[in-house]
Length: 347
Image (tube, rainbow, N blue to C red; front, top):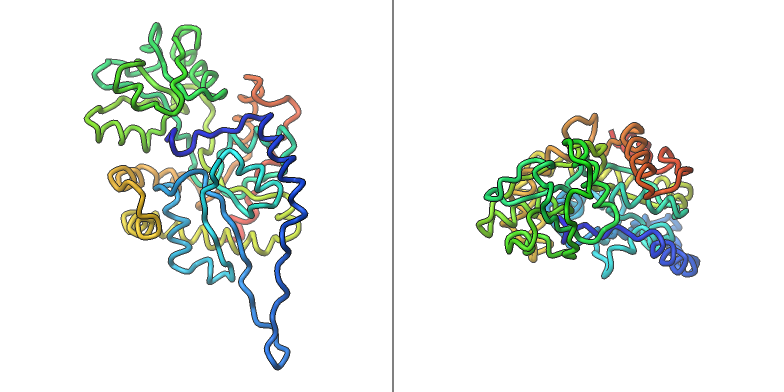
């Protein structure tokens, strides 16, 4: 879903944004004192929570919108605001600096951020596998990575995509990314593909762009990266700051408990979840999000003991791959980048 999520942060710009936000972190208003009744008994005040979405509302967010609209956050004493930043590339920095309480982000982005000392932690794995993929028109005859040799491959100019493609090509017997012509098409991936400006694209979500292209009359072949040598990773995760974990763990626990409840319910009746998402965000494209959520639900729930579960093996293996490709430094500790503490508490 390149137009939905592919705003991976340039490590240098991330650090600059974080430093700027850090100067403001101390200016955030503290919670108001709990009001009291005439008898002096405290009246519970909901904790106000801001959640930054990785992009505009879409099927990936159906669970959190259901959680809010059904009152599950309110049941936990939380008043939750969901919003999409003008620039989603600032999410990790704003969460790390305390300007946002939680954010939807990507495992790749979390590791890039922590490599630059941005204090963010993944507290739930929302999408358990990569959505980024390689796509080609069915009419092209391109069905596997080695079929790309000598072809033009469009990508959105993101630093992680060439090594992903390189790994996939090598896994299928080619020399690597030098065997293709990379073309930076920005985020116009589907237009570049269907206009035949390029023969294939990398950086497109197989749960979104494939549907979009099909709706336009251009069915595609999909090559999922974890099936061609790239270590499996969490496409979408929920993040918060180290400070939040230390100072307000009860808020984090209540938030995650409500979120797990909401995503479980969304997985049981995905089309009802899209109905709720549509009510809250009328701008969604149902022609994409209704079939899209059918593809997403297994990625939320299958193969894990609970929604949100993460494994140290997956974080370590993908961090090792990033180190191998010089995307992060050798001293990065992936074990500090995530925790299952709150998902476990939600059971």
